[in-house]
Length: 116
Image: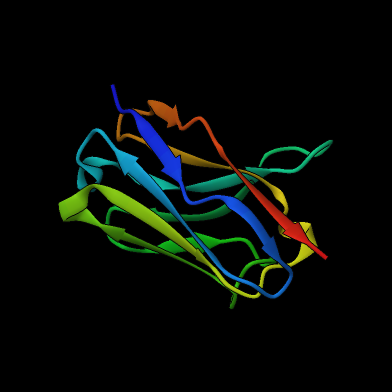
């Protein structure tokens, strides 16, 4: 069982920055993937950025060049640095992890609100 706890959300003006953190109760280097999804009101949950065990990254086209995912294996924490935030980035951001055996875990979510 892996528990994921997000933090760092909040209210920011357009053009501003936030850094989200996801602390894992398990060793993140043992996970196949860990990363971030988001869900805006009335929309489906979508991938933001994920990082694989080998360090490869997959991110949504809408955030490339603005958001950066990184991890600290020693702290079992994954970060999402969000710069140049736009109104359309407003959503609940969820940390997600997947093991080699296909088990998936979600955090409780953290709200990010970007004011225009």
